[in-house]
Image 1: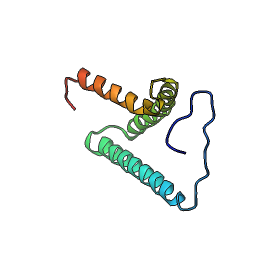
Image 2: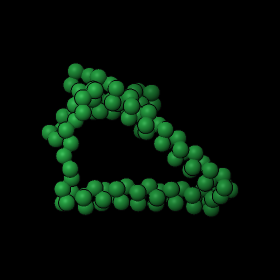
Image 3: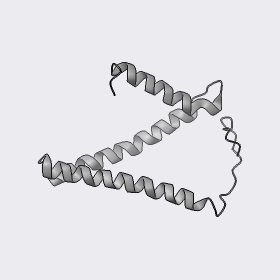
Image 4: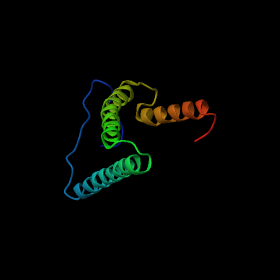
Length: 111
């Protein structure tokens, strides 16, 4: 693949991963899961021990957030896939830039 996206409705030619590429994808996935798990564990311990929230309530909050994230990830992917721009290979970059500008303007420039 040369990095360009196929036009909507047409399949994109995909090549199989080589054996040398598997460790890179495995390492990236493991690092992503480790980071998310450590963050979730920290939030759970902080919520129960420091903030004094019941363990069941704190776990329910994290569960609801994960379920909500599953649906919003699919929705965001569909919106990006159906967005047509003049430069289709730039569609994701354009979407991120638009959202960043909107968030910065709505927050008054505060992070």
